[in-house]
Amino acid sequence: MSYRILAINPGSTSTKIALYEEETKIFEKSLSHTAKELEAFDEVLDQFEFREKVILSVLKEENIEVSSLSAVVGRGGMLPNMKSGGYLVTKEMIDAFREGLASPHASNLGALLAYEIAEPLGIPAYIYDSVTSDELEEIAKVTGMPGIRRESMCHVLNMKAVSRKVAEKYGKKYEDMNILAAHLGGGISMSVHHQGKIIDCIRDDEGPFSPERSGSIPMLYVVDLCYSGKYTKKEMVKRIRGNGGLKAYLGTQDLRDVEAMVADENKQAQILFEAQAYQIAKGIGEMAPVLGGRFDCIILTGGMAYSKSLIEKISERVQFIAPIEVVPGEDEMEALSFGALRLVKGQEEARIYARP
Image 1 (cartoon, rainbow, N blue to C red):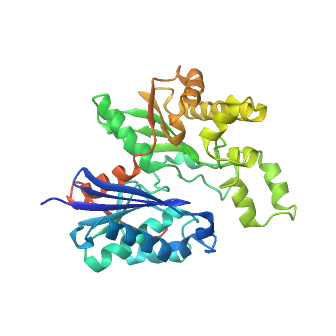
Image 2: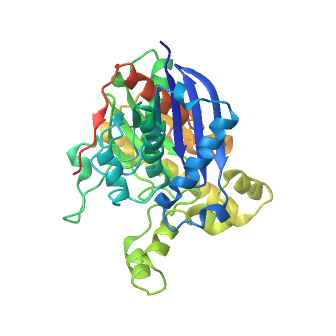
Image 3: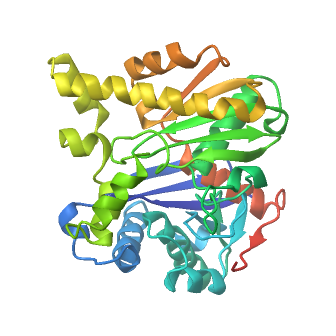
């Protein structure tokens, strides 16, 4: 019996879907959503029906019978109390999302969309390697403010997927390697992989600035802004995540646009491009002591890893730590599909979500 897996990956301005039969991709499509389409919805979860209709419309156009599916897998969302690997999407999990237990993020739609398609068919719906998957060691969770603990929040899905591929290249098992991975996308996060677990990470709001994130900034200035009366909580969150970083300075979150500005000798773009590479390198350096600098490699992945200039600037600062492996782009659709395939085949056991 061959298994057909439908993967759904909701992003802030797009919905990616892919169909795999075993490990063979049948089709993949990225559906862009305009600002005008999305501004009609107050909250992310309000987009559910809109995105479901778009997905079903594409499946119809591709002549894909949903009755042929073996499972549906969605991108994992921002629920607390998650571990890495796969989860069966249950009514209890759906309720947790709808009750606002998860931080607002487009990825929260993954479980809802997968469940809505799978449940009438009597097939399982899964999520895999959620953003909030937590394998951090206790020492990594301590902060200097009682009552606040560091939580794992990084690009788990892509970083684990590319780490498995790099381990294969080295002729080793992922579980036998020490890897420092940096996901360079709209948000930037970093993680230390030891014996198959992410034991520490830098979140997208506590490290380098990125194309649309402000990254780590002096906290007392943030306190002043929060109490200035100029911004609502929602507006402040948007300044940190969505309208920060390169976008705040240059009006674009596309690194290709920034590189074009650099080529045109735009002074502000030049210093920001240098600072982007500089801060990414500093973030990697911050992670290096976690395993005493004993890493098999440093992986640079995500959309920005396509920039040879950026990679060169980062590499010249951090190559003394470990060899650099560049894996540009994101293999998230394959990672979701292959993860679900292991679950339906019984090679991995699906977890059941429990509220904290």
